[in-house]
Image (cartoon, rainbow, N blue to C red; front, side, top):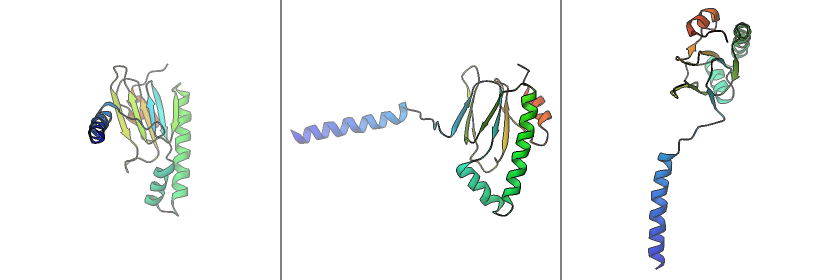
Length: 147
């Protein structure tokens, strides 16, 4: 009788574990930023991403690179705020841009091609990765209209 119970219990446990992974889609809420409206998302790396960049740029040169990029992000942020755009500053490495029809656009900032970044989202189209040295052109390209 005990063997039958253990067999049935094991079978139920096995089946339920297999179904749970298919039914549940988890989102890392700590490292994920969800954007549903027009905004400028300013990414300042932190944690593991910052350590990775420090390793890539080298210990000696990194502080000056970091200072220059943070200064540029601050200037660009001021420009975009002057346009009336919502500014979201984050160190989250996973971005989800959600369109009104529910379509989700994902960006994984852990990829080595990303460092200090600005993404401009008009709420409908794909987000535009801004050229930090020409934020005005990126703003026009994004198609964001004044609120």
